[in-house]
Amino acid sequence: MLLAACASFPPGDWGNPPGDPFPAWAERTDAPFHPQEEYQCGPAALATALGSAGIRRAPEDLVREVYIPARQGSLQPEMLAAARRSGAVAYPLAAEPQALLKELAAGHPVVVLQNLRLDWAPQWHYAVVVGYDLRSREVVLRSGREQRLVMEIDAFDRTWAKSGRWAFVALPPDRLPATAAEGGYVNAAVALERVAPAAAEGAYRTALGRWPHNLVARMGLGNIAYARGDIEAAELAFRRAAADHPDSGDAWNNLAQILHERGQAQAARDAAERAMAIGGPRLPTYRRTFESIAGG
Amino acid sequence: MKKTSARIVPIALLALAVGFHPPVLRAELVSTPDVASQASAEADRAKVQHFLEQATVKERLLAMGVDGIAAADRVAALDQQEIHALAQRIDAMPAGGNITTMEWILIILVAILVVIAL
Image (cartoon, each protein chain N blue to C red):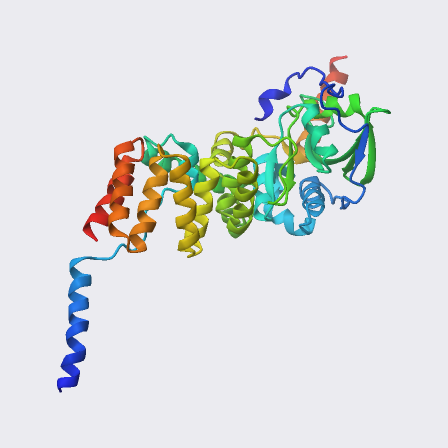
């Protein structure tokens, strides 16, 4: 994920894929610009990405969430975490130029980590790529104090490759990244559940819109509904999870608990027994559910 | 008198019922991260490790000048993998920001050494 990839990355493929070509150019001209204060490109880049997603956050407020005084900078995991705290889905991109171009073509600005200097004396820097032009081989960035920094693609790629081409998009929960893969997107939604459950609920729905049989997203919907006290919605989600995935002990376990709370004793017992029969690493949990149902 | 006892009896019965069959206070639903991870055969050990790593990361943030409440909030916003990555190598991770004073000093030292060597 991180520094190990720095040593030497071969030049990236910036060509337009023949089967599914991007437009020759794209730019989010409306992406907000926050000229960075000293050392604070992390908060500034975040504010630009979040603002483009319709989430207004001031860089000064984000400093508290990502800036590390002794390092005079911000770390990658905290950049993702702060995007989530703001209610956005933080989706890390595949480390390749094609992924970056595809997101930009969809109108999604991309936060990138660059090394502006040498491998042995790095100057790490966050910027937001807001556009590209394949005709002139340029990318457009909001970077530092530059509102519209135009960089030649090869020069940009050299600085970006030194971070292992680290990049992410921060999107509102109802918007799927253009390069979204099922597992990666659902993981991003799961990471959101604890800090911003309402946003996570939206992200799970977005995931299910594309991958209707995803077990984790369906279970997530049930768990969030339950935490909110909406037991009917929780039952609906767990029933669907168990119907789509009859071999998931987790689905039967959670359904059993809900049925129990709704006073459907026999159905609850049946579901708990199914979970136990399936077994697996969480069998002790299933047993406890069964015992609490049988005892209550 | 009769009225009072008529009221007390059902309440007492209810209390008895509750006493003999304690209601489940909190359901044990399988959490979404657990559903996603699948690998929790050693769940307890993993939880202990996660807890320790959280403490490590918070301590490092404090040591690097992040104030107490903010550090706690920031650790709470990280997911398990991120905590693990930070606990392992927070000092080696690139901090996107700008060149640090320490790095300037190193660069100047190297430059001086090169000049002396020549």
